[in-house]
Image (cartoon, rainbow, N blue to C red; front, side, top):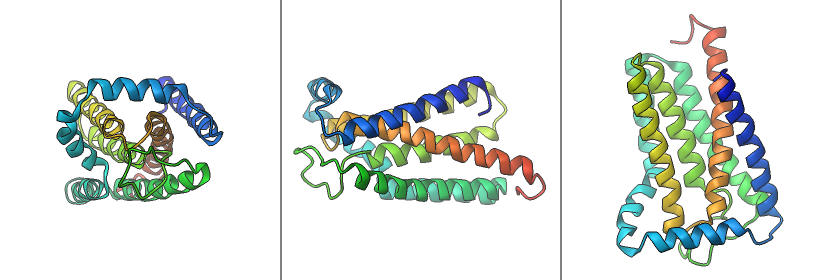
Length: 210
């Protein structure tokens, strides 16, 4: 996390998050939304909906809950990593509350195609909270792996999964593309803050981390 590349990503995520919040809150038409939406819905037709409906569940409450519980049990029973357990649970839970707060702050309505939606649109909760969970889960799992190639595989699978969850929200027309992009950038910023906290705790209390 303290590498130059990590700090650059962190800085870009913060700036992009601020940009998306300001741009969406201005209520002006976003060119990116129309272009990306038309492109995505043109490529992914109705026959792909069952797949994307299954994928989107991985970023929904039940899917998030199952993965969090699984990770907590693994960190507790297998790794005895109590800092990891606390960071994961609080990052996801508070990240969900942050998502709700930003939704209220921005006040963007859902696309007219999101018939069953019962919350505001920006940022996408699936994209944001899903990224927080899977990014932190991959980080914690990779800490226990020594093989560099396996770390890359886990990282790649995680990135693909996160992108598919975000894509599913656009394909199913439940969110605007900028809702998803904003969810990603805010999620990255939030996740990196918790990773920094975890690494600080790990070094500050080496005898109490497990």
